[in-house]
Length: 345
Image (cartoon, rainbow, N blue to C red; front, side):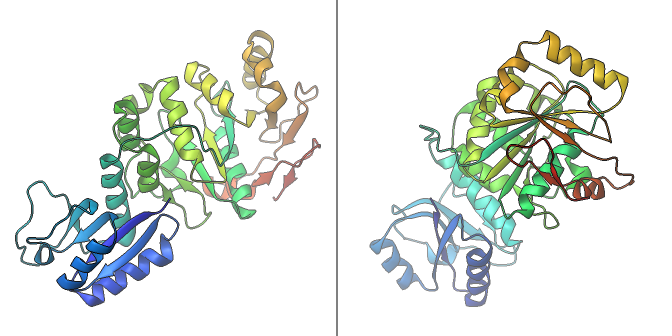
């Protein structure tokens, strides 16, 4: 459901610029209306209700704001501010439109009750995991995400490693995902709305992602139930949700395995990786629970002589100092009913 946003400003040029940008870039989440005078604003508020309104202070003195769920002050330090109601939150006027959208949706998410009922999951969820680090798990996750993006799918990459490497692949100029973790823990607000506000999109690949947590504990203290709530909120926003897991096999990892539609198990040709993967298969009952939806990814040119799952993908070794080049070179999709991947190398 789109957020109904009202913009009330006497600056017609700015109103046209902002409304055009919102309509062209964020029409999937925001439905925008514009008022250029106090009289028009009063008429609009009598005729309908709005979720959020960006209001100049010169237009709201004595105005009944009951039909606006979240009234916000459209504020500029270069303009004189008239009377403003106590406690009214402010949104800076002259900033990037994407930043205004983030501000509006984050504040609105905090105002709303959570309202999570039955899951309305949209995305196919793919978990990417390995019992050992350094085998190319993140590269595999992003190569798979890139393949889906090239199919025209909306793809969201969720990095759940406590020490994130996302900044190697994506620019981190937005809000941290820690804001989402905090809301999940408190249960106060609308998680889905906040997820919309903090997700970023990489222009080069089309993959959506989140900026890394502010500190290690923000990720580490999440419970399995918190993880389920996060996945539920993310899955409502996209076609493909790709989850990059840490190498642990704790309750949170098991919850992701349970919710995933497919699990990519990544290994390489190193003896250590082969031993750890064999131990996982032979000694851990978790493998049997995910075996039917597991795909083995033999990375870096590894050859698996006796695969223990039906689907196997052999990724070649790509020599490049640039991590982005590697995952874009390896982008792949998994065909149905075959052990050979569709590779683009």
